[in-house]
Image 1 (cartoon, rainbow, N blue to C red):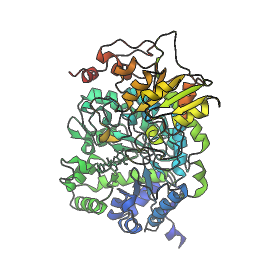
Image 2 (cartoon, helix red, strand yellow):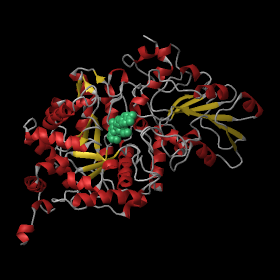
Image 3 (tube, rainbow, N blue to C red):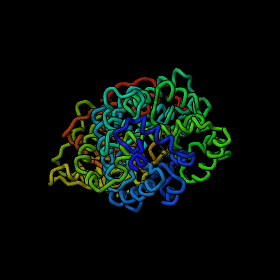
Image 4 (cartoon, rainbow, N blue to C red):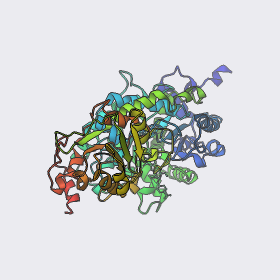
Length: 608
Ligand SMILES: O=[N+]([O-])c1ccc(O[C@@H]2O[C@@H](CO)[C@H](O)[C@H](S[C@@H]3O[C@H](CO)[C@@H](O)[C@H](O)[C@H]3O)[C@@H]2O)cc1
């Protein structure tokens, strides 16, 4: 009969709590544990989803349906997984997650925005909210409903390989940048219950504040290391952005690989359940990092059953397994059936997951279509990214004397040299987490290199000569009016980006010495963090920090050639410290901005 067929959880007119409670009552332990399991798309067969009742699938960095896949191919892939999920007994839709951390950075031809280190320099929450909205549209263009962003780390030591994923070393700037969350998810409606997850419909996506907590404060900046701080420092430096994220309705929070005073965050019940859930009233779900519970033990995976026990009892709700999901499911099932993990903990986890899925309309709109593919890499988003690039640029030096500023550069002149390893390389311009975990070199996606941007900016009769690393003969045999030298760091991600000395690798310094020794030069640094350039500063006429600008290189030339002014400012002027103070010379003339001591940083560069 109709009554028998009516299920409140399927009725969008029912209040959220009624739908969650009705569905919970119907679920078996297997169905509940399946919801707590997130697996990588490479192992996500339709059988796995149907038989193991998997609740979530992800793309790890670089994990794509096919090389240079179109948005339609992405939509088809996600829909196939979704069909399997909907064919299960209760038809709970799955949620698909991906790292869209500076635009939809795994997807060919997506708009790649500046990495967070540059966005923090803008101090512009309105801009960052627009970037969130654009990113949400491009993620939805591929049928995906969930992004593991924003990273709200407070990077306290630039030697950390993930420093560029952090908006700033200044807590207040990171707090300001949480405005990206309403961009990604939509503005939470007034009167919403504090801590409730909020995602406003099909043009928005679930976000993920990460990595909880203190990932940017590890000792010596060692990735996945130990944050050795007293409570007052942890709560005043690293926690505030989580409170802001929760107030703004963030749907999920990801735990950090790092430890706090020796306790692994993935096993920290006081901070996950005690503080995040009970004190801050967070009602979305907590997701582990990739193999994050495996890393609770040292060595990793030494005792996976213990890892499950510690992680789930600490308050983790969904586990990014991502490959050996049968082991996870069997282990958790054993622990629940033998009462090592109470059923109430499982119910708390599943209620949170269902709350997010119901709130974001996944039950009503589980399937994607092609209607949003037009947003991927659209011109409006590229223009926004170009504006963002402009606002991330920091002017560190302009001319060897106040009477001879080099910038802005003239568009009309006879001959310009463009040089440097990063001048004509989209992959380098974008940095890590772009078309692959570690990032890549070369023409990896659609965009405008700084060289191309120079050519588009100058007058037609201005000659632009490109030479990546010119020698003295070349320089002497040409009469260049000035040179633009674009150098920096190669792309990296996480531990492989940890640095002990923050120098830029050859041939960067040699290119600077050669070119700037012969020609008036502006050096543009493409780096994920402040780097030590003090030994080169005297030979440089003008110096600009451009961080990791992404695909829209025209944003750099817009400012170099004076169509827009410099507005980017550093938080505690780290670059100046690295360039000057710590190595004992006075700031270069026309140095912009003051600086203040950063505890202990100088010791790094004076070998103490
Ligand atoms: O084969 N190996 O040598 C190897 C080494 C390290 C690996 O470690 C893994 O590498 C990457 C995949 O290849 C994973 O992305 C994660 S990182 C983690 O991934 C999440 C999902 O992408 C992000 O949201 C988080 O923000 C981030 O902290 C892990 O570090 C994997 C393989």
